[in-house]
Each structure stands twice: as C-alpha cells, then as structure tokens.
Image (cartoon, rainbow, N blue to C red; front, side, top):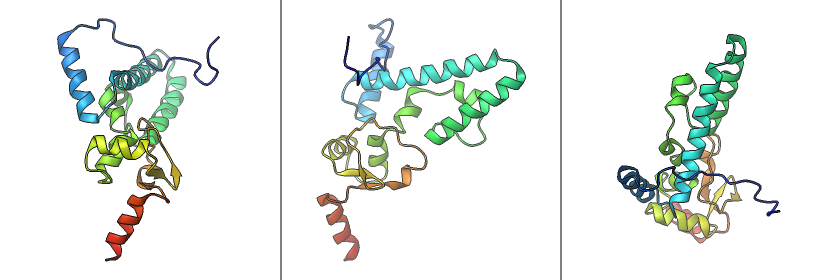
Amino acid sequence: MGDPRKPRKKWEGPKHPWIKDRLMKEVELVGKYGLKNKRELWIAETLARKLRHRARNLLALPEAEREHAMRVLLEKLYHMGLVEKDSTLDDILGLTAENILERRLQTIVFKKGLAKSIYHARQLIVHGHIAIQGRRVTSPGYLVSREEEDLVDYAPGSPYRKLQEAESSS
C-alpha cells in the first residue's frame, strides 16, 4: 500500500551502473555540490531529463498550441531560476543536472557567503539555522525560486544571526 506522504519515487538510477566516465563525473558532482549520496544527484538528473522530455514533446504539437505551451513552460522555468527571460526551446533542451544543483538551497547558502564551505551550508540548513523570508527550511535539496533567492538568510532565533548582527553593528 505504501506511505501516503511519499506517493512516488522522484528519481531513476542509471541504466548502466558501471560506466567509469559516468561514475567519475558523479563523484565529482557529489563533491562539488556537497551531496549526501548519489540519489540526490539522480533526483536532479531525473528532473532535468523530464524537463527536456517535455520540451521535446512541444516540438510535435501544432504551431498555435506549441507557442502557448512553450510560453507556459518557459515562464515556469524562469520562475524556478533555470532559464533566463528571453530563452528559447533550445535552452530547455540544454538543461543539465548541474543547472538544477545550482538552484538547491545548500548551494545558494554557500554562494551567498552564509557558510564557510558547501558541507557547512548543509549542516546549517539541517540544524535549522537557515530561513527563507523568516520561514525555517531544513531541507538542503529545496529548490529556491528566483523570488526567494534574495530572502535566504539566517533564521530569526539562530545564534548565527545574532553573531551577524553583532558584527554589523560594530
């Protein structure tokens, strides 16, 4: 029957698990983005694969339907921060797992300078020191939208926030 909170699997593993080039690239990405395991990478790869598949399906539609569906898809991806405002279908077809990994909360916390390393960013998030617009987020894999990116900061009750305020006041 299954747990109702987890209705489906979010990822597909590789079809051929022992290809050396793919394994080396996966290890590099896991280290670069501070992922817990390869499953987090496979989630990003699956999302990118599904978005590319959706874009390829748009090419088969009649012109009028394609334009509307393409605008909707581009607007959604722009909101997610994966493409720019003036993007085309080719930009969607060029999406990779790295584009998605760049939008994870863990990566954004590190790039904003709230953490000393990518691994420190993960610890801060998991332990509840990071909030988006005052709302605590404890999932390092949370995909941050374009609007939320500027609102990422330390949580209101976090000692890191108090430390930051003390440094800025002196």
